[in-house]
Length: 157
Image (tube, rainbow, N blue to C red; front, side, top):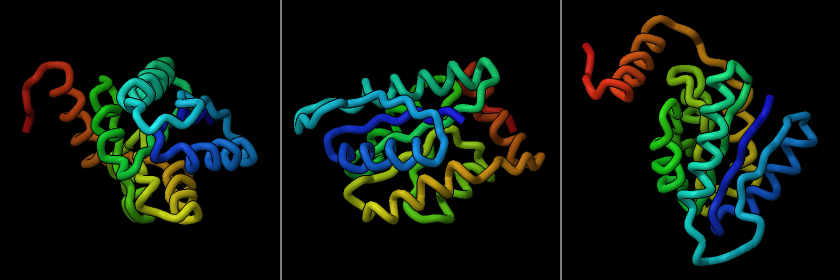
């Protein structure tokens, strides 16, 4: 599986750790930056680039997920969710990481680097990447409604 990762300065240390951890675990990791610390960096471009890559690959039927990191993960999640076809979820515990995949078929997870220890954050990422989408009809229906709104601007149901 390919994993796209992006961060801002607040998640840079966590990002470097996760890249090494995921490569060691056999994932194909693409790092969308930044490559060095800059307290004034702007996360939207990094996160949107990662999200666009995930959306493009999934659109081609490839097994691809993403990770966006920041101090809280909120802004990074918002940026990623602006990309059509992306469902980015903020994970703050193991249940929210797993449920994001299981119920929402989230294709990007957002984590706050200042909110968790390195070990906790790694556990959230591992849980997210390991959890499959349940495929339950009610969840698929709801995801379909979100996708339809994204395309048409009309809410169904």
